[in-house]
Amino acid sequence: MLFFSFFKTLVNHEVTVELKNDISIRGTLKSVDQYLNIKLDDITVVEELKYPHLSSVKNVFIRGSVVRYVHLPAAAVDTPLLEDATRRGITDSIEIEVRLSQFADASG
Amino acid sequence: MEHLSINDAGLPGAPPPGQGPPQQMMQPGPPPPSPVPQLPPQMFTTAAQLLDLTDKKLMVALRDGRKLIGVLRSWDQFGNLVLQDTIERLFVQSLYADIERGLFLVRGENVSLLGEIDLDKDDYIPPPFEQAPVEKVFALKKAEDAERKKTDKRRHTKLAEHGFEGEHSGEAIL
Image (cartoon, rainbow over all chains, first blue to last red; front, side, top):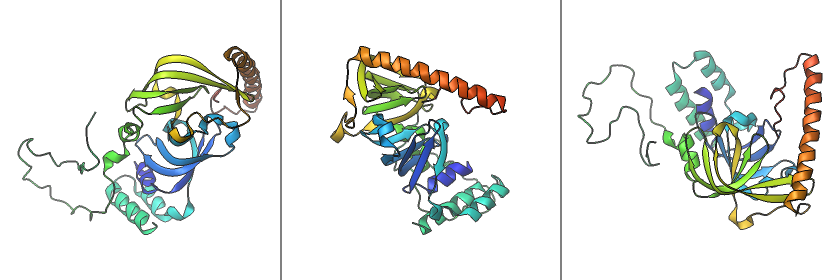
């Protein structure tokens, strides 16, 4: 659940999602669930002319299983905290979740 | 499916009023962490994400590269979808064509993404693309797919010789 908690802290940040079929979609992260399905708002597609079916689409729901990468805004990620959380496992997951969201609030 | 609203706190262990006596025995242990303002957990479920897409006109891209356009009528937590009045839109070179398909139940695993169609630019297709007769586009598409299958197979064999197992193991993902 660590990455679910982590992605929750990135809500309302701009991310780029690269899919396994090589489409890259940039947009505002609106929501994420336990399967890491992702909802993006105000999307722009890299190489739009290659993917004409997306030109009249403004927000997308991407199934977690087709995601290859999520490019994150570096400023919104507290790497030491994530490392710490990984090493401690799930025992303190509630505390980690709270600290992650505190960090998200602090970084705006 | 749980019918929680965004305003429900959704805290585990807090029974809703009228469902048995509240628990008097508190578990000894560390005090709960200080509350931090955050969205309730039910905001982050598949249900919450698909709920606002219900009854909307959507473009559904399937894992095999097909593009379906229809109205989302039902769904579940796996992303299984029911689409009504669906058309399939074929794109090939700079042509496109629509085929009437009707009612779909799509198994979730085959869904790549679903996009809500912006009604301001409903069915906008960028300039180089022009509508063409279905038969023509279908034939071109078939030829293109066959060609792609051949190159994919060749690439897969080459990679396999060097010990690489493709991400899709030969399955064409478009």
